[in-house]
Image (tube, rainbow, N blue to C red):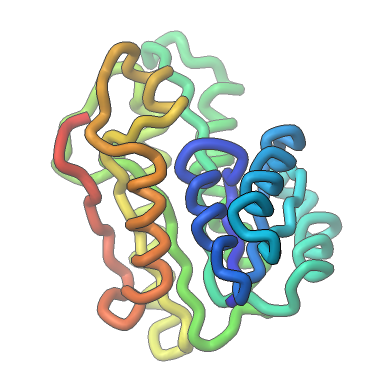
Length: 235
């Protein structure tokens, strides 16, 4: 299968890419802005599976204006079509609402909502039928969940990603494209540790990656347009 994962340089994205690459039949395109971490990911994949086919692409997903001219061309150089897209990249800036700068707000909206929307749009011509698009949201963006100070824009952007998922599932119903959204709960990642210092999350990034891989591979048969909370605790 041909799989694209964004935000693959650390945390859940890193572990998810490793699990897909463990199968030598998969072609895994791993996108992130951190070249060093992508090289570390590639080395980790090769150690576990010498036949791993992992294609790292160093690209800043906030630069949506360069998707057509640079990013999509690089993806096409690696794979001709897409079976699974996992929009995992995210940005969390934890500040009191009144202290957020315009740049803070725009960057969070751009990476957490605009970037996955535009990436899906750009990849539509090479999406196989069927294809599964999995958007990684957060319990912070799940309606009715507990909210936390300092995370207003991050949570709002993730809620927007969930709504986008529902809308695209309806718009492309019957096309062979399936859209689902996972509202991830507390997982031991660098992002969570920065947002909630000292908090001990119930899941490791590797455990959440196991869930995401299985969901992406098999659950499109059962779900479309769903926002699914993946959590046992708050945050």
